[in-house]
Length: 256
Image 1: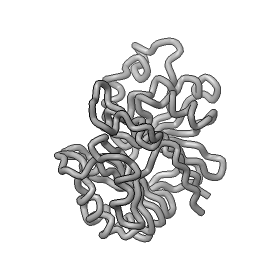
Image 2: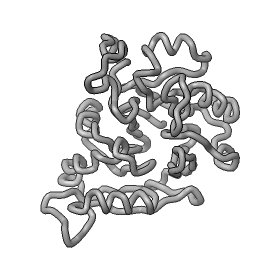
Image 3: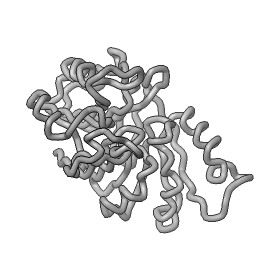
Image 4: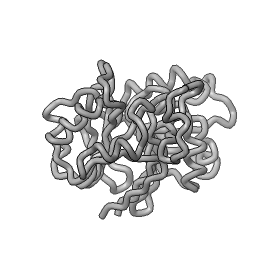
């Protein structure tokens, strides 16, 4: 069984946005409060995250997570990586944390977090990691769990999504090639970004995401990486097809 917890479903600024006067920022519905996008997966005794953004500490406390066997990174942008220092409590208890990431993402982390990754600049008490490089051409495993990388383009930046059994998680997608779509056939659940209804240069909007969903034809789909410009959670869900809905922070899915 896969247990998937949505730790965050918001865009890079989160919701509410600092200083925003948008009506969604004042919503009393907890489903309209969104931390930066990330999920936590539990299966067969393995606990891991996809992405580790600036809300990581708060997300781990909210999810009551006290074990982290790995982190998989989709790409290097700050809203998906900048919580890496807050992995320290796991490192102190467990030792080195395996991370799975593209070589380009590792290069970015080494530049931005030299006190963690540069042996000559390493700060006492910084977390430490077991590094595993991945790319779109090769499946990889966390213990005996096989994971299939799927590449999409976030404007001009390649981003990796991941398929695990009949579940797939894609974020920060703008375009995706046909050969990568082929990796997504016969899904029970697809999670994919949909920023808002209006077009955006580097993210799918709702109509673009729905077109991709038609090509993949999963049994059900959840949108994530959502902007306040999308609108109120319940109102938007009422506009979507029956098998498509907005994810929300704290949503838990359990799949066979």
